[in-house]
Length: 215
Image 1 (cartoon, one colour):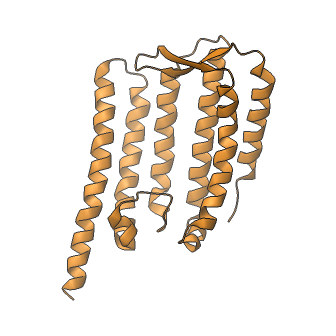
Image 2 (cartoon, helix red, strand yellow):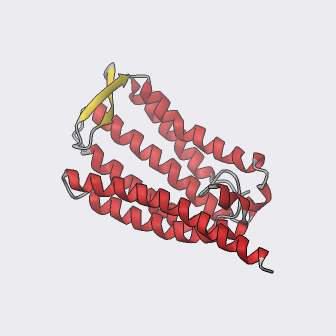
Image 3 (tube, helix red, strand yellow):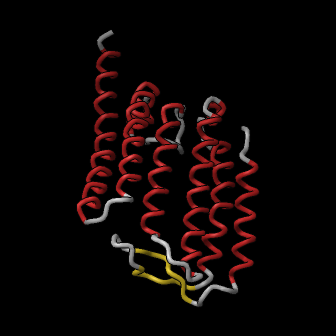
């Protein structure tokens, strides 16, 4: 499979830069923000090195996955989609790492807004390429019924792609809206999306199973 080498190089540069600024970080760095954008948890300085190395680990993990998947041949059928999802995930974690590092260095930033926008963009990209994913055991919407049937897999990922895009748009918009109401909307949307896709895959499986039995 084609590999995003430039993503690896960017991850290595990011980690090297993390090592350079490491001595400038305080002993305690912020690692979590609440819904209001306020820091509510701190961690040791070395946590920055872990977050800096995470994109590199993710890169190699996503290189290994296609080699150990029993449906490994299908990865050659969705090479572009897999590469784009890999890119989006790694860029997301690099971005979050440097936003939080900037705050630790004393820069004032609305971390919650950046994270929400990042999550929204991540869902938009995954949603765009999700329908292209072929049947596999690691990447995509995995329910007992999508794993049991390629027909159910395809239909569920078509619907899932649209829902992911809608959720991504909602997340980006919500980044510019303050208040607990939008938090409720996001949580509700996640629950509806998760259980909706779970139920949809079951319904499609049952319909497909009945049509086969009726032949």
